[in-house]
Length: 192
Image 1 (tube, rainbow, N blue to C red):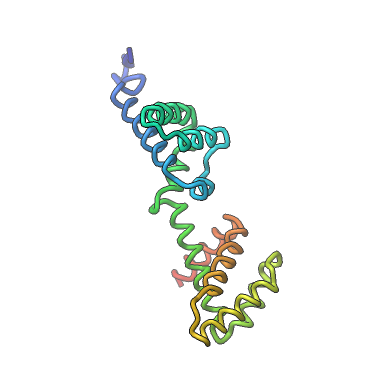
Image 2: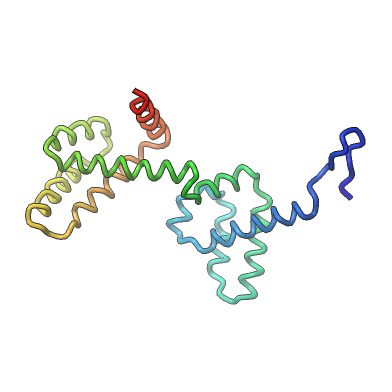
């Protein structure tokens, strides 16, 4: 029995219906995780002790066994804190903070790529290498050179795409601290 507080009249715990809705939400989240690829799962803040259960569920093909395994996965997920589940949901959501941050990083990489290929590309490359000493200088210079040649000869954009991937990886290596600082600078620039 739930019981009531005699002074306020409020219930002590959630109703069975609320508990069931919460359990079904966790089950749905587990089903979404099972449908993801290993690369997509690697980007999510999933605890290490939960990953074997997800992999095991993905491995099972029999309908009944898979349904039981999904229920077991949901049971394991319900043992986690609500904050962990909310962080996973936020990372999966395109509208969440993680989705916005990832989109912003992609836009920064695109803008940087265009700046490198523009007229002041050499100065931009020098600034980039100065701000990111861990970057592979030779590889970046070669990719910029190959991309310019591709554009001049009207070839398929293989180096163009590879340059983008390299820049995206370089910008994401900096971590959340530099991304937050860049976001703050963007907001200050918008306000001016």
